[in-house]
Length: 142
Ligand code: AMP
Ligand code: ZN
Image (cartoon, rainbow, N blue to C red):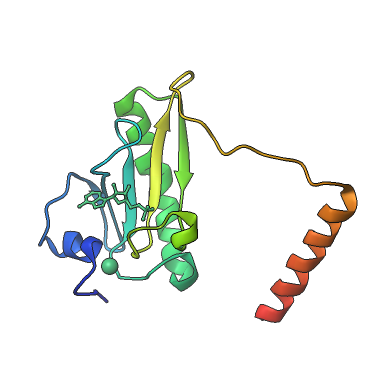
């Protein structure tokens, strides 16, 4: 259930302190120690699972249910009007702590935080080919 070397497991076990916001049997929320905005929170399953792909679906449900409630509380406390949910999965996606977690980032108009830039596909055929490749990959996962 816990990984002895995992910093978030140590937080769950109380071996490392955190600014706790919410917990229930399945999940724990606490403030990120290096926030991109005041109120930036992390929401984790208490059990150790490395990332989204290792997470049992029932814990994904518990995380999203808590994200709604904790997210509203974070927004209210931070005086925010919006909230970004982010989950980094894998080093290339920016994951540094390999215990699955959601970032809850309160937002307000003009706060200076930028979303990822979007670029259109080269042409409609490239978009259709990517959609077909994903559908085929999905089938091969079953
Ligand atoms: P990620 O890049 O998605 O793996 O994000 C890991 C996050 O964990 C970063 O935003 C860190 O600031 C945060 N973090 C690391 N150690 C702690 C800690 N002890 N308490 C609170 N947040 C932490
Ligand atoms: Zn862990």
